Image 1 (cartoon, helix red, strand yellow):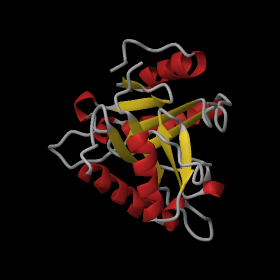
Image 2: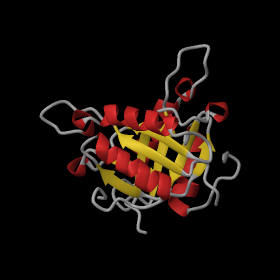
Image 3: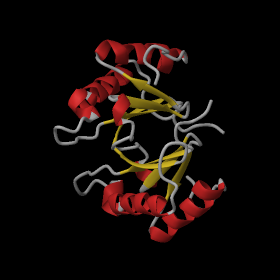
Length: 103
Length: 103
């Protein structure tokens, strides 16, 4: 079946109160905004292409921060902007899974 | 590839200010909460099974309110609890696409 978005990316941006850990205390919202602007700058945004979304808790807190790429169903963790750049250039642009960040 | 969640459902819960239309002005958050509690009550929640999430704007405002079921990549609109019940019982429990709500 043809997909509305080729890659639809959801960042867990859930915010919990300390001492509970959560993706949003590890830069999730900032890096989601970065990814969104980067995809836009690359001209890859929109129907038939790529969408970058925020989501509520994806229930993989122990592996956080996490994002998931659908319909592929590939989950990643990440630390910084360089990790997001690699996921974008490798997976989203070229379809190559980034094994070192995959969870 | 095996999927972490068999069905991962994202409700667009974006909130815009009037007069802009948005899914959240059409009951999205309330029906997402209903779907989540229903899946839990049915014992279908969790890894290897079903996850119901909120998401930011899914960029299909003209068709809203919308939700998407991944990895299937099937998009639905809905009006009320009965529509959500049908999506749960037909698609999520039995893998049958609800054509009348599909967008």
